[in-house]
Length: 113
Picture (tube, rainbow, N blue to C red):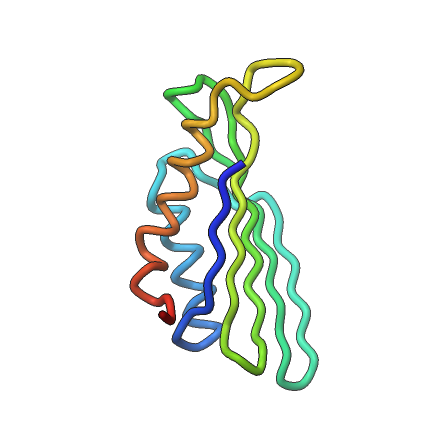
């Protein structure tokens, strides 16, 4: 499992589009597998689940992204998983980290420090 969390600057809708574009253009095999949105007054949450084929690992990996509008700004949590070929423990996490980096390389420019 590889994980990235940060508060981001920018509008919720803009960041959601940036995330989608970064993931789907960052890999030719990346697809949106599912989406869920919740909005109530000034609070919003969007969940996106992406999947792609990892050439290095020879398997598929997933990336779950949650974007939440809070009183402190827009928070993102991205978690990549899958890809290991072992039964009882993980021996190959290269695909997870690489998938996550297609997103974090762009989101770092929006991160509030």
